[in-house]
Length: 234
Image 1 (cartoon, rainbow, N blue to C red):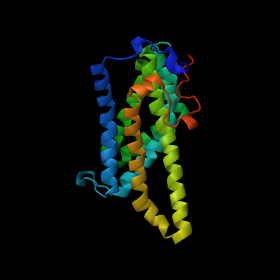
Image 2: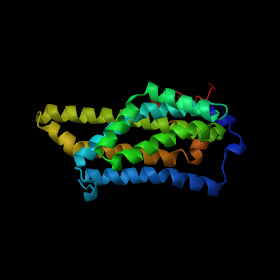
Image 3: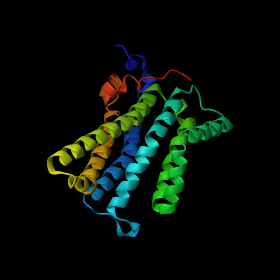
Image 4: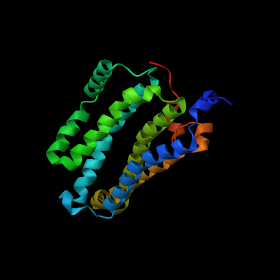
């Protein structure tokens, strides 16, 4: 056997109970996001949010677009560190990452203006990812491969789904005229959000399957070009 799986040791394989617990912990937020996307596609948004489905769709797309590259960079750095940095070095590294991706803190500030229902989960997700600078370096090689596959796979899924949406919208405009553009934004777009989160759920399950342990690779391995397996130390 060659490739990343060849160098995975028995220590990389978790006990079944720990493995199931980890899978459940990762599936929960993804399933909640998928359920929310389905409700959005059905035009159902809780009244207490005080916003329309289109406003929610707008923020879902913006937050994902603003953070995907940032999250990929955080995971790329975290999985290639030999050991967790001291707290001051980690804080400095986080500050540098936020300077490189200024759209992330800008999105947090913009979310604050819209309400805490957007700002709190968004800011929390960013802090949780930055925390991986300290937590991921000590994890097994298999877990690092999972983190890379999931994070970069999410980026590729976003690009593929956005490309499909653009093609469907263009095809609709060609066949029915510019009136289709309104349908694309109000009717079609939410179902592409469902597709995006559905792919995330599927990929979360996939990377915890024995087939991934035997052959770790991205869901979009033709696009990935070996990025998932790239663990060269910084």
